[in-house]
View (spheres, rainbow, N blue to C red):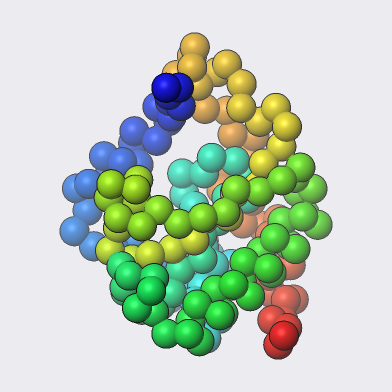
Length: 166
């Protein structure tokens, strides 16, 4: 068995385990999208940058409704989430030109969910060679762009975006 170490996530995991409030619900309630790093608000879901990204452009799509169970979500919400995934992939391809993407959900604590009570979809741009020796040897993650810069890079594209029906 091989292990993938991510020591740079330690700060995040410690914070989340001590938090009594949901990071997604708190972001929605902030009413300041720039401070919350919310890029887009749909009818049922919103797109927000991950404050502890694996790579620049790592974002999440979450429903407004605080719900741990994807299968219990309304069809309108999950359909819109799929549309927002398409939009996110399109914007990230144009702005960052990644070689590929990781997308997915970690449903439940045992599946690695940092926030298990509010399901969300990760969208992570990937480049060949974006993983290197630094996290393993130096216990340091090299992220080439800070979150405020990422937000500034992506926001105009999301502001211009219109979801396509069909």
